[in-house]
Length: 187
Image (cartoon, rainbow, N blue to C red; front, side, top):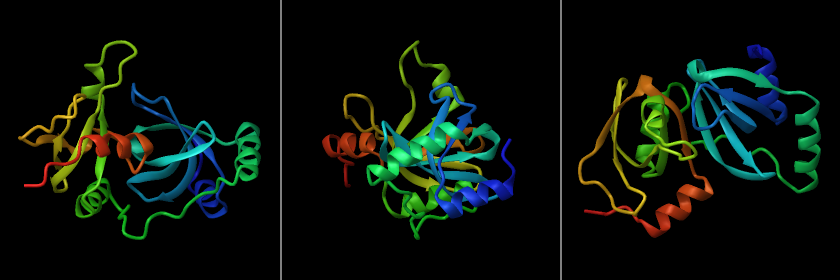
């Protein structure tokens, strides 16, 4: 496991790394670590050598880091293509997962929340996660109105224990495109 000093150095220098996550949906997250608190790691994800969005992973779900010659070569490609780490959004609280969720709720952002329990329901080759908008959050639970794969928003909020969250994704192309065609029902 990467030590805290080396991880802070990666954040400061804008170096990439690959994080192995204890989650059946995404074994690895590759990108730029932009914030590391005692509770979570926030990364600007990179997919197919393009900036993708933000991924927050609680430390309990991080099983390994890789930051070596493969990541250094990928950085050379990213730099050549004009892709660089963006700073953590100033409005985003990263001190705890609940604080991060609360700041996303205040910004009225649609998010993806992954839990091991919902991922276990997925058929082989199928992704299964919550996509929606956070309606309330406290230190132990988050509630969100979710949208299904047909673009229909559920009337009742889904309640999720904060401790069950494997990762949170936001501001990525998938969420933006899905949200464009299934807009949040303002009431």
